[in-house]
Structure formats: C-alpha cells, structure tokens
Image 1 (cartoon, chains in turn cyan, red):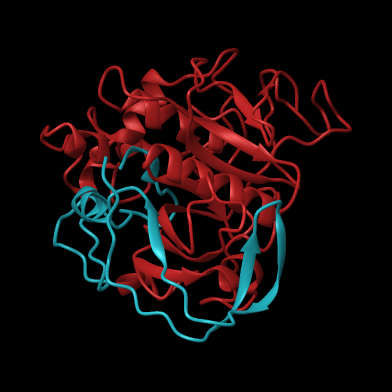
Image 2: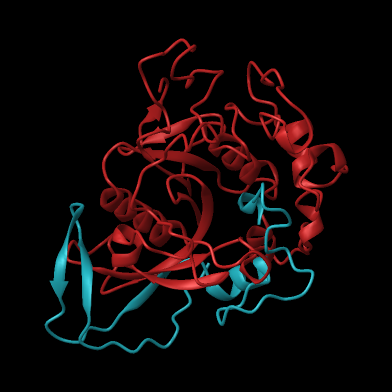
Length: 76
Length: 257
C-alpha cells in the first residue's frame, strides 16, 4: 500500500512534540520542518468509510455507525 | 475489512450502514449478513458465550462474541471481527495492551502504522468509544529516525455527529494534533482521546469474565485487571495467533491478564 502525502503547510507551531523513547514534552519548533504522512492510504480509507476529509459523508455509506450503542468499525 | 477489499480491488462487502446491524440497536432485530449477526453466531469466544443477562438493548454481553459484559462490542470481538471479516489470507490484527503510558502507546501505534500502512482501532475516551486512526504526520519515520516528531494524527470517528451532536472529534474526520490526542480533556461533549486509560465506566466496560484474560472480582484473577488501567489499540502485526490472544507493549504474547 502506498502512503498518501497531502499538501502540508507548516509553520512555527507550538506542539506537544513526541520524541522517540516515549518522552512527551512541550516543544516549540524552532524552524519550519516538512511533515510527512505515514500510514494507511487516506483515499482508500475514505472509500472504505464513505467519510471524506472535509467531514462530509456519502449517503448510505458504510459509516457512520448505525446506532448509538454499537460501533463496529473494526470491519470497516 | 472494506479497506482490505479496496486494496485488493474487490467490491466492498459492507457498503452500507445497514450492514453493521439493526438501526434499532436491538440485537433481537439483527439479520443474517449483518456484522452483529456474525458476532453473535460466528465469533463465540472459547468457553463462551457468556451467560446472557437482560434482553434487547440491555442485553449483556451486547454481542455474544464478547468475553466481557460490555454494553457494546468489547476489544476481543472487535479484534476478532477484523480478522473474521477480512479477505482470506489477510494479515491479522490483535489487541495490543499498553501498560505504560499514552505517549508510549502512541509511539508504538505510529510504528505499526508506518510499518504496515493499515488503519488501527483505538479505544478512546477511557474506552467509551472506538476511533480509527489511519495515519499520522511527522518530521520523519519513527521506524528509522529516533528524532522523528509526530505532529498530528488522521482520526476517523464513526459517531454520527450530524444526528447526535459532536462527540470526541468535531466531525467524522479530524486531523488531531498530538497535543490534543494525548492531553486534551475538553474535547466535544467533555471527552478525551488517549488522555485516560481504559476504564470500567460504571460497569459499561468491564474486564473479561471468561477465558485466560478474565480479571476482577468474581473471576480467577480477582486482584488483576486486563484492559482497565491500560491503553488498548487493535493493530495489524505479524503474529500468527488467533485474535483471541492479546500482546503487550513489548509485543509479547499475553497468557494472563
């Protein structure tokens, strides 16, 4: 599976950065850094769920959950 | 999984909301072919099913695939269903139980996402809900660069915010900052993402009552916990064991809670 790399704009942001070794600490990025996406192909997840990245949902799509008391997202 | 079907170029087997289960939420209304029906008929755990208490919407366990008297699907049945409903030969998913911290769990989750390029399922808001994390944005790949810093995560939330108001996220998809993921305590409807570990939530999300992971009062391991107090993420991994088994933060097979 390929990675999906959306256009990312970065700036001087205050984030709670995550450092390898499991240490989380407040960190102000000193310079803009290019961010990369890692994980499942986002467009395929959109297809699998019917949920678009702008928050819209296709009618009668696999998602959202059908009732409040269960959410079997595992199989979606 | 629909995702696996798409990757393989197959038609979706669960293309509609009604494939999940009955709109009523009442398992008495389930029909063959729905995921809830499969959970009740094809995913019974070893030693199960649990003796049913109550009926209809109040049935506990809510699915007969549960190992706990959960008000919904517990982590075991979610992991098991992910494999059961996947195309033949697909890589397995298992529960990964982190007895460490939200930060450490997130780092390991990120490595799994980077390594396998497959979504993960996270028990969020102290296990009141489950969200799907598709991936994350970082300065580098945490698998290969120890200086990599995660910036945000791609979170898909199955909650129908259009009908039931916002819950945890602002909508069905949200790019969530790492800070909010780990630390926020004021997300929509006064919720959290991974700020708090799995909790019993007043008995709605108890630990298992049967099997090797049973834990808590009245079980063979009365002084232990399994999910409660820990961070639970269902991830793809190379383990060949069935999804009845869970793995710990060191990727070791767990044979007890």
